[in-house]
Length: 348
Image (cartoon, rainbow, N blue to C red):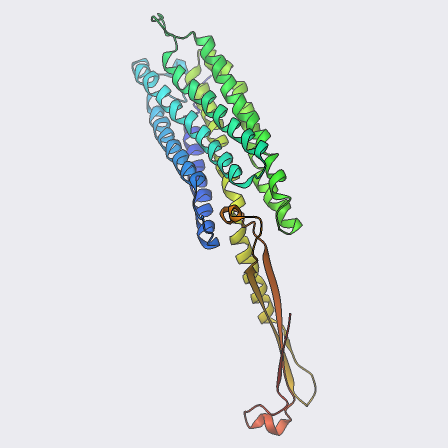
């Protein structure tokens, strides 16, 4: 059996790196154009930090393909194996932490939204336990027993078991977190279809959870395989997919201002292009145009809502239609001025 997963891993990592960066950048752009009082918060800083950790992991992993990562063990240049075994745990250290920190950003966003005390406690519990479990495996892996074993090392089976637990627990928490948006968003002052859209976008973490569960199920077989250099590349492919899904789930809910801006632009262009009305007879002509006025309504629920990334405060939208008609006769029209019959009416 010949072949290598190295090229596939590199392509996946490059694509996911670009995609995650674009989604994250668009999140920040939307927060800027929204003009909220608390445009950037701790969850934003944590998200940027997670992407920086991810970038270090990607660089190390791509470099490790030169030392045999992604190749079958039988085809590996054995002189490069010590260097691969030295840098592979370092790359995995950054990989574990970038996933944990990205999930932390999503949880911090939810903490800013929830109002009930039990919800805050539950979210803080998940935040702490995810980081503890993921952090423990990132450290313990450096002390895994080698051949021959060294004093104080950790048995390989225990390291594998801890890795499966940490990855599985993190994935399960992703699935649990998908229930929180519906608890928070449904009671906000938003249109029903907008609520459904925001809840659906914030629930995309279920994809990261499904990927994480599958990834955790592959860890034991890969770790115990003699062909681990080949299998590890596939595990890392699933890991970058999990991270990218988390970044997307963290970013899409903030796109609402951009979507509304495009929607308003489309309505304005549609309103001014084909609403001309003619054929009102010899007595004159008319023109119908429209505009949309949007202004924020005061929120009596407290200043905490000002920091909501979803623009949860009430918004009053007014569609104003302007009808202009002219009752000039043909002689008046030829003089190039409006007669006394000109009128303009606005209807809200």
